[in-house]
Length: 415
Image (cartoon, rainbow, N blue to C red; front, top):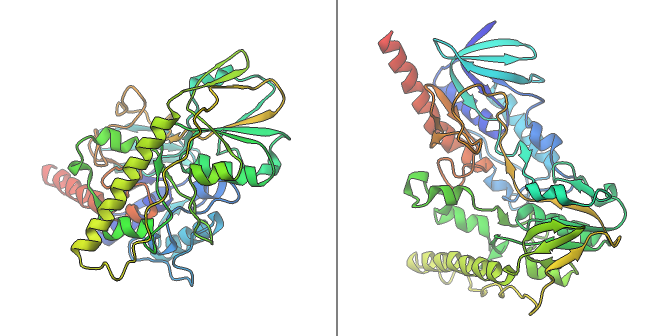
C-alpha cells in the first residue's frame, strides 16, 4: 500500500496540467497511467490524423509550442513527443504501465486498486479522457454479418479495410476526415449525415481557431450557458488539419465523389434506411456557421480592424441534390465495410462510487464531482468551451487545483 495526497488517473494533457499546478502548490501526488504518457494519442488514432487546432494553440501550463510551424497541425507522433517533453520538463511523477481496476471511498479519502498495487489518497482526479470508448448505436446489430464493422479507434488506413466500398455513419470531424481519406484511395464512400457543425478552416485570412480564441469564444464558461447539457453534446467541428490548411465540408466531399445521404435511422433485411431530413440538417449547420462568422465580423468592426482583415466572403451554402437516397442495399456487394463515426464516451467501469447518472455520465459541477475531494478533467465544455482541447487543460486544472487545495485546508482545519 502506498499513499499520496492526490492520485491523478491518466497522464494525457489534462493529468499533466493538473500535476503542474499541484506541484506549484506543493501537493504531493502521483499520475497513474495505463500505458505511457499520451497513451490514447499513441494507440487509439488512425495513421494520418492531425490535431484540429494549430500548433501555437497547443499550450500547457508553463509550456508552449516552440517549433518552426506555428500555424501547422501536429501529427499524432508529434503530439506524443510534445506531451513526453512536457512531462519530463515539469517533472510529473508518472507511474506508467499501470492499469486501474477499482476505485472506492475510504474513511479518509479513496483507495485505488491497480495491477501494480494499492494507492490511498485524500483527493482524486479523474483525467482518463472523454474518448475511451467509441459509441456505436444499437441498430448496428442489424448489419449483414459479411460486412466489416469497425469504429475509428480500430481504423488505421484504407489499406487495412476489406476491398470494396465503405459506408461511414456520422459526419462530424472524424466522419468527414475518414470519408475524404478513403475516397482518395479510390473506393466508393457513402457518408451518412445527421446533426453537424460546419466551419471553414480559414476566414478572412486567419485560422478559424484563431478567431475563436481572440474573440473569447473558446473561453466562455459553463456557468454562462443557458443550455449546458446541449452545449456539452454538440458534435465536434467539421475541420481537418492539413499542411495546405484546406477546408473540408459536405460540398468538398460531394465534389470529390463521396455520396451524401441522410442520418441512418434503420437497418432491416440487409438494407440501410436514411432520414429525409438531410436538407434541414445542412440548412441549420449553414445558419449556425454564418451566425458565428457574423459575430467575428462584428468583433472586427467594433475593434476597428476592417482594413487589417480583408473580407473574403462567406463559404457557399451546402448543396444538396433535390432527391437523396432514402435506402442503400448492403447485400449487393458494393459495400464491404461500415465505420461508426458516431462519437465517443468516457469509460468508468472501474469506478466503484455512486457518482454516475443513469446514462453512465459522471455527475459534476464544472469538474467538481459529487463526492468529497474528487475531480474530473478533460470532458466537453467542462468548465469552458475549450475544456476538451489541449489548450483548455491548463485553465481548468488551475481552477480545480485551487479548489482541491482549499478542500485539503478545510480537512486539516476540521481534524
